[in-house]
Image (cartoon, rainbow, N blue to C red; front, side, top):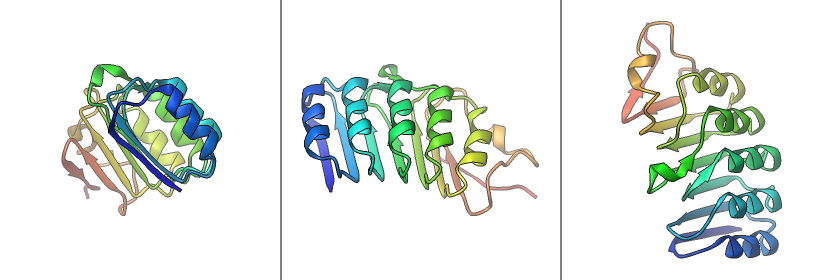
Length: 171
């Protein structure tokens, strides 16, 4: 129940076919420069509610995260990165929806998305099983915001990595 679409030219049409024929898909990776849009990614989210690991390396927006939040509540690991940061339109709203509804998340990796520091308390509160949080190339979040005493929001056993800086609770 694993499918990886890597370095291929793939379209939403192919995503619809995958969604239709792979309803028990648990692990899915799509990294492409093809014509995959939110529509294709939402088809996967809607038709494959058993997804546990999802890697998206193509353009998407909050629309995809809303669909995942609604249909893929058992998601354990979510990786989002885009080869072109201008095509990723993910904001605090989408990540809030994902974190609030996909509470079984253990690994969350966000690269080149338009989130702010404000999302971190939501993730700390809603994703109690989170063990790894990786944020990179997000202009409004930096490691120094979390470095002052009393501002670390996560349990001690959560790995928080922001732009390559490993952040831990300061005493």
